[in-house]
Amino acid sequence: MAMKLARTIRFDSSDLNIFDSTAEEGEWAISGSFMFAGISEDALVGKTRQAFANGFLGLSSFGFSTLVTVASASEEICDELVQTLASRFVDDFGAPSHNDARHAAQEEIDFMADICSEHKTGTLLSITRSLSEQGIKESFRSIAKADSCAEQQIWTIIDEEEERPR
Image (cartoon, rainbow, N blue to C red; front, side, top):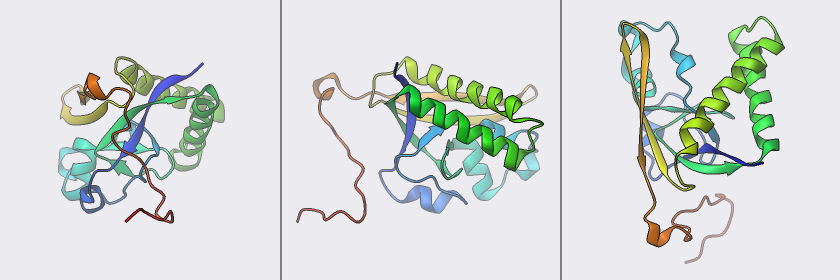
């Protein structure tokens, strides 16, 4: 059964300039707030601050994207994303076991699926984070496709090697 998840989208080159590491166009993405666990206000400067304040985390590159679009993901894709993230938790974050990492990764994927579930496919999402006394606070904004174009494709991901019409 398919579920809704987020894919990165880029309308211009601004992400390339504002993040140290930029997600590739069309990557599956999650909120990624765990990347900033334990960060201090003093450490939130420059491009790190921008990633903290407004970045979704691309799961392939572990780069950031300002916007994502809601898309359908098959059960197989969801399982692959959980496995990919679990491996990163073990290899890069020192998770105590693959089982613990898989559980945490599933929670991250489920959280993003929950955010996306209330929106139509094609809806754009942005994120805003702030630090509070209770920790990291997240809020999400959405821009839905107009109903009149619900079945129309209003953007596409083009492989740079494909020939473009003139």
